[in-house]
Length: 294
Image 1 (cartoon, rainbow, N blue to C red):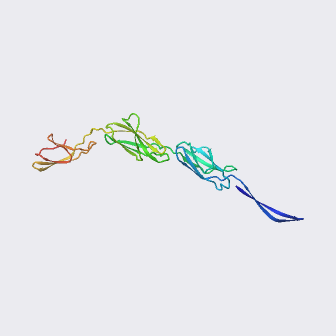
Image 2 (spheres, rainbow, N blue to C red):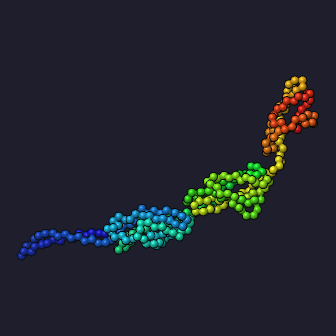
């Protein structure tokens, strides 16, 4: 709105004399387009919705602002397109595509016309997370495989709430959902069958849904039978205790054969005289004879 001032001078004519006798002032107001809205903000609230808020322009009432024109630029590129007219200072844009950038601007409207645009506001609709990375499956026994993975590089714009663990038994057939975990990035799969192949993948989950699965990994449970025997004990030493007693001591094997040592077998001249002793020493009430470990 513009205000124009006009001043009039009253002049008295007396014969040949001209004399001003007063000044009158008048003011006229003309309507113009409004100033633009300010502080436009865009916030993604779901995979298909973005909420807009803005502040009415200065002198909105005086300028007779009757509504707002909203424009949108899909994919945050190209030209702005007309979206909607509204009388409010907020708007929920719906029917959008998830994981897509949108840019908005708003104009104020009055009886004269449309204002210049507000600031541009940008938001990207929410989406499911990207796939977890670095999935690792490690067989720790004949009945257990441990899984670990790294969190996705993109959470989809909203926090990850958990992970879905999927498995193929015998590494064939269809995946089954093994578990839905919390935010932990590890999982222990127990109660498995010995010497069996298992195939795994992991999906991240957020408020929008379940993301793409990680790359698949394979692990085979250990055999239930011990396949490697321990190496030989070392440092066998015999100490005479008395005329009828010898004390034997030795060091544990350097290699346990991938299983806990459960005991030692002591032979003398090829004959077993002690079996399954659990210590690294023993005392023998025997005549003196050569003693060795097999």
